[in-house]
Image (tube, rainbow, N blue to C red; front, side, top):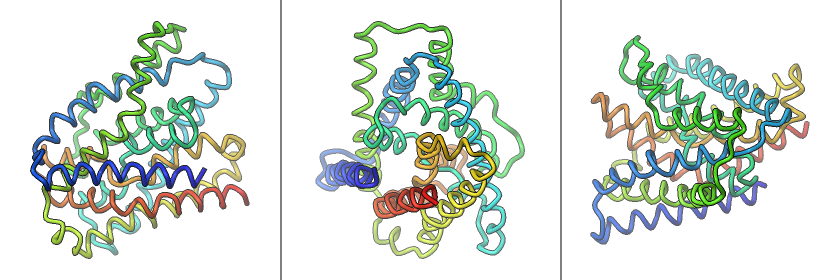
Length: 311
């Protein structure tokens, strides 16, 4: 499984390099990333999410749903607690705190789960994404904007959340979409990973790499997001699993949740920084450097996960 994960990450970086080269040779411009991002957000992701819930609601699926949602909530609680403990010693800004807590679960987990475990496990990724969407537009937004108001409307209007609710409704009602519709939706599964990484490459092509990659602070925050917090998270979750054995017996579901939690900072954090004028350049730099570094960190962290769950 780890070998497949490494190959998946490496393959995605080939697409990111392609996006970068397209900008450097003048074929596309960095601002062209915006319409591509809209296509991914409002077309591809809804198709993938709804299609992932086109399955029979068996007792096993119901139990898996509970495990997945509880794991997602627990993961966010653990990450928030550990980040609060290191915030003052490391002088983390609110933006850095949000970047350390919240991962880019959307693009990465969908691709990694599909390629390493199969599309039948995708629904559990979207349970994590649903929980994270609520947290991103409540807790994360309050951090980035340094405010205390929860944007409930923004949560309800989020296309990922709407798609999850539609998918769940269809699953609970036992409604199966026509085969040709599911085929169209299924085609989006193989496209979102390359599209997301091409977008990252296009954005990367428009920034000052020398300035970005020589910032010691960015490496510190990246190490927290990609290495230290994931190790603490896995170790803590393994300890909890001693008292909640279902997290041991349903390891695959926990694997999906952990995989979603060890990726680079959430793209929504960058979006919020741009939207509310909160140092978007720094947020973009954090996201970009972490995206490059995760090629090395993600396989190693998941090896650590498998070792911990074998104890």
